[in-house]
Each structure stands twice: as structure tokens, then as C-alpha cells.
Length: 308
Image (cartoon, rainbow, N blue to C red; front, side, top):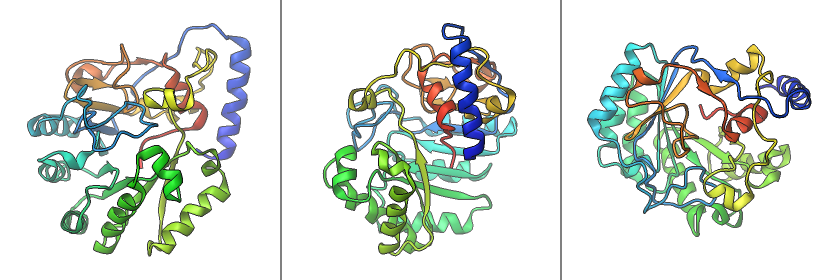
């Protein structure tokens, strides 16, 4: 979202809050299923990051691993619906013993991005992923999460000694011929500013990644991030009348759904939120949603999209 559009939306938001502080939450129709997310490893992860909005970790099996056939059914159903791109997330997708089969079958139907912390990417896996990138008929991306330009910054969020492990995995991808996207959550406020972002470009250039690709995301104040950075305020809610048509179309939930082993949800953010589950299958989840969760406020105010 451009800064001009975001400023316009912020003005509208402030006016809307003044006009209707206690109104009902707006509803949002699914315009078209452009993007399908799959929580392939559920909430199981090799890390337990302090800002994780779904509190993933080694012992969190709230959402278990998806079976290969579950992934196949969801991908094929979405393809029949005209989906344009797929995303794998977790948890940590590369913990799944059948992740390569899942990647291969999904790339038969459309572009795919895999979101990872990068820790498990050794030379053999990096080489295989790079070969997939070179030979797939559709675009293939790997997104690596990094939350600081120093061990002190990153490891305070992602855990001790993760800074070098993450960068090493990303470097292996780059050296094999697949240039990863780095996702940075702006838990450190200065990373949202131009000087902080420039530090990332400088860091990656020092590591030999000469054409860095960066995506910055605002944190969501749910899950572990609620304990780390504080909860949402009462006023941080969307109300009827705040969203014009441009704003509605900018929200990613107007064109995506999330599939997990436990059912279908509007987006990747809300899979642990009570009442967010829409049904067992994609067909069950084609209806409108109510934007009544405070995380919806972050998506609107910050112009957030989880898409690459």
C-alpha cells in the first residue's frame, strides 16, 4: 500500500472512530479466492519466537501436521476455483517429512511460496530447493524470517544463536541459486524506519546477497506477542463505516483463505482465535466474514498483507 493511500485511510479511520466508536464490525465478502494458505506443520515449530501471533513451538500441537492427501485435496480444490497462488506456512514447514512431495504437487497447479525460519536449510536442501526453482513451470519462492541486523536484536525475539543459523540457511539458498525473501517483523520500532531498513540491506550485502529482497510486517498483538509487547486497546477495532471499497479490496481476507488440519479460516492470523473457524472444507468458507477481531484493525491501519 502506498504512503499516500495509507495516509488517506488513516484520515478516514480517525473520522470513522469519532463518528461511530461503538458500532458493529463490518462484514467482508470474498471477492475471489486468489490466494490459498496451507498450515502444513500446524503450530509445531523448532523455534518459539516471542512475537509469534499463534504461539508456535516444539510442543504446541494445537494444529497438527497436515497429511499429504489433505494438502492435495485443498490444492486441487483451490485450483478448480481459479486460485492464483499458494503459500505454505506453519510452524516450520521444513519439519514436515513429506514437505518435498507437498511442494512438488502444489507447483503443478500454481506459484508457491514457503515461509520458513531458515534454520533447517542445509546444503542438500538448499540445492534441492534451487533445482525446484529452476525447473518449475510456476514461480517458486522461499521466505526466511529474520528480526534484527545483529544477534542481540534477532535472538531477543527468535531465541539464542538463531541469528547465524538463519543467515547461514539463507546464504546457502542464495549460493545454490535461489534468492530468498527476508521477512522482518518490526518489533524493534526503528526497523520500520528508513535507517533501520537500510541496515538490513547493508547486512545482506556484507553476506554476499547483492540483490536483497525484504518484506517488513507489523506485529499482531495476539499470541505470544500480546505478552511481549502488550494487548490491543479497546478502541482498536474496525467498525461499520470505516471501510470504503478501496480499503475492502486491500484487505487480504477479501481474496484468501487458510487451510489447516482442523479446518478452514479466513487468514493466517486467526487460526487460534475462537470463532474464526469457517468450516471443514474450502467450499464451507466461501461466504463473508465479520471483521470483529482486533488483528483486523492492524491489517487495515498498517496495510498488512502476508503475501510475498
